[in-house]
Image (tube, helix red, strand yellow):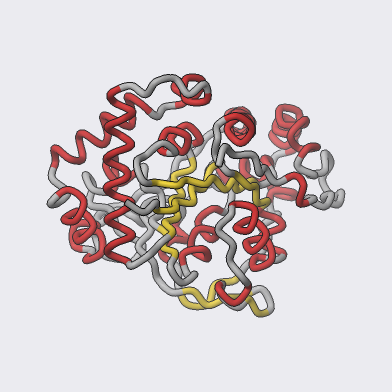
Length: 328
């Protein structure tokens, strides 16, 4: 059985991964699936909208994927996936995954089930690379051992103060097929703590997890989306050329609809999309919140080239900061 490549986007929410994922999904032979982790635990049970605009239950692509993988998205399939995710890929399992202890029965089953989904997606879309934006580092590391799957991790990182400000905002979540819904909101100190924890976890995974990894800074991506993706995919060992990616003209690109699940409302935008660096946090974020986030994330701020004070220029992000260790 030939190995299928999965590019797993790891990191913290509100870091720009939706647009990164969608741009990668436009490359020939690549397909993006959104936050696959939510398929069984929220998307299918609530029949949320796919990125194409149709309810999950009527989306032709996901219907066919379910048929190929499991004979359909039956309730027992969804329950099993949700149960296995909880039992084998939560954050508390990370130490054992890094230490590469003998996999539990739940972990072995989780890997097998995800391998079936990934392979079904690849078969239905005639793709050789699947982009999964599920983000959770522990899940990514857990799935790295899935049979026939060659998983690479791309860490999408954004200034934690911008992330914290975004998590505080009221943002409509237009995925529901009926009624209104909003994305979660969390306080600044909690966002900072989670941002730091996830970044440290990804650094550990890149160094000791045996996964080929790279890091992409959101601010660099917005400034040069094609160049940064070419560099990142080259580091991951699945190189794309500028010709493989959409043309970006004056900060705008044309992008078609996709079948990504869950995540940011930007998933539903298609046509001409404007790329802009959203720095409203520098003027709209409360100074106390900004100070708290800066203090809690200061070591990593410096490591990633982010300025400690508002208005300072971010340091360049040298290519040698990309993680490249792997066992392959």
